Image 1 (tube, rainbow, N blue to C red):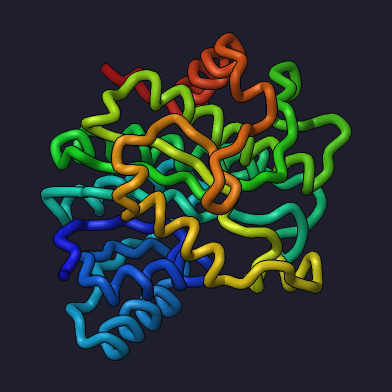
Image 2: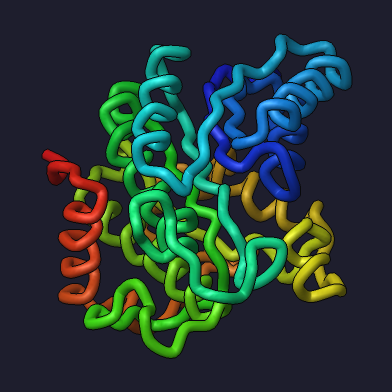
Length: 277
């Protein structure tokens, strides 16, 4: 049966995002694929069209390290479709190579991993939420990690004691926390919001360059993510964190309502966006 839904995936030109796009294409979903390299984006879309004899996925281009480009990306998505059934916030950078181990900042002056892995997805979610709501029932799936680090609100941009892995872990916990907070603000019948650790050390570019070995396969990560995108058993499940396909608990800070509220308000200020209705 052909999947009638429209699904938007960030970071769709490599690793998990690309493999998930291929899986969803075999099911007939209408895909909107994001990347920051126009050539890789075109090659990914063409490969899907040729492999499965389906319409070429729509493509949208942006560097998520710049909030102005994130806003343009949301506009491009809204202009290319009148409905959005699933948003998979997948794009991100790891804790080391190929993006470096030393502290770097985004175009807006924010710590780079926090900006790319968290703030970009946070802003995209807010910008796309009206479209998702109009397409209800819709789903938001945040590709996070079991590698989490508590957030120090007195040093949110980690100007002290920086390490790439700490920054990565903080950005992933922020992603989970904001997803939990958003889930409390939305009806599960309208939009569900869930996060997951898809698999451990899959053979992706960031893992191979920084870690140098793998544990899980890419297929395992795709299967876990696909379940949250399409699984009937989680159609009304919201505000949860999964380790692969098993529901589990994130870092305890994620369940601190005051910490979640502070992160939400600080994030709204950082991306200069009004709160949701």
